[in-house]
Length: 112
Length: 116
Image (cartoon, rainbow over all chains, first blue to last red; front, side):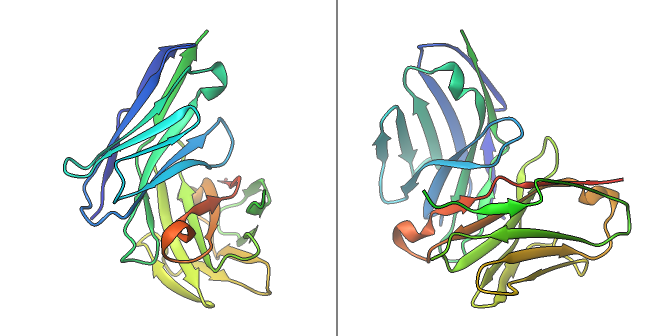
């Protein structure tokens, strides 16, 4: 079945860039997402990218997709303490009924 | 901005009791989902619902679980006889349509279920 893997933890200093990486196995993945989860809160959609794109930029967020290597990354420029959260990579194969497979989540700690 | 709303935010129930978690999806959305996240674990797909019927379900979604859209706005998840291992955060989600940006899936804040 589909699998999505992420490193568990990332620590960066405030003002630096953060890069969160993700790999997935489903070569039919059509949509790839990044969600943010703050402690005790829900899943906030940050951004998404279609598989026919290789980059998407949205303010401080840059998503890079290497479809050949099935690798997705999220870069957060000028990381702030408010960016501290768990970041989930997720993929969906549009051939199914929109079931989303989530990664394990990467806990981002921003050090002031 | 439209959002998915869920109630209750937290429920404590005794093992064996029935629980109903409620969700109001975004109003023009057609696809509805339930996911769950056991503490410290991955977010797992439970079920998707379209056109008043289940379109896909995972192996977690056994006979103890059911979903319903009782009216034009609510979408519910019922657990018939709760077990300790049902303790989790349950997320409702919805999306507009298949294809294009309609595949963007929006999640609610979650309902934290504790079974004691």
